[in-house]
Image 1 (tube, one colour):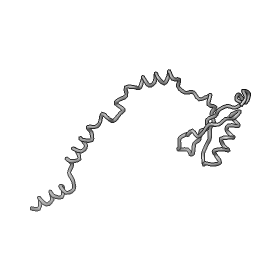
Image 2 (image 1 turned 180 degrees about the horizontal axis):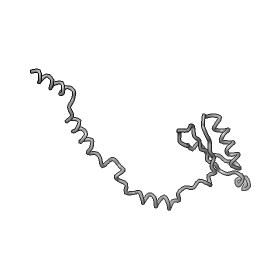
Image 3 (image 1 turned 180 degrees about the vertical axis):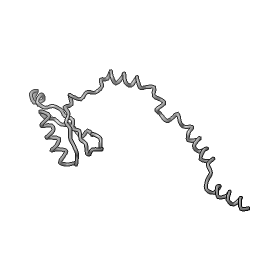
Image 4 (image 1 turned 90 degrees about the vertical axis):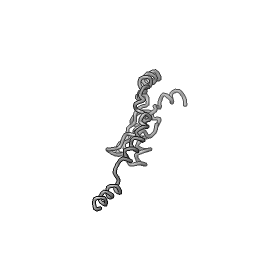
Length: 118
């Protein structure tokens, strides 16, 4: 590709939604000279193959992602979230087992009836 051709094409990301209740999902990327052609290409390559409610095309350069500095700052901020891990609740299985063993079962309840008859 020459410099003029590489400047001519833009990268687009294609998203779709299958029905009213479904989430928007990323489907694929494509190269197109503008957003109208990108939408047309997305419809031709995707909508005729799958049943979808809507398709979106977004210029990749318009999508903002976190910089490495922002990502580092964010991970430092959320590092101390041990309370979200369930490894600290291991004792609950033992407590639940003890509780279940202490519960009355059908045989025990029926045995009370036999005791009253005697």
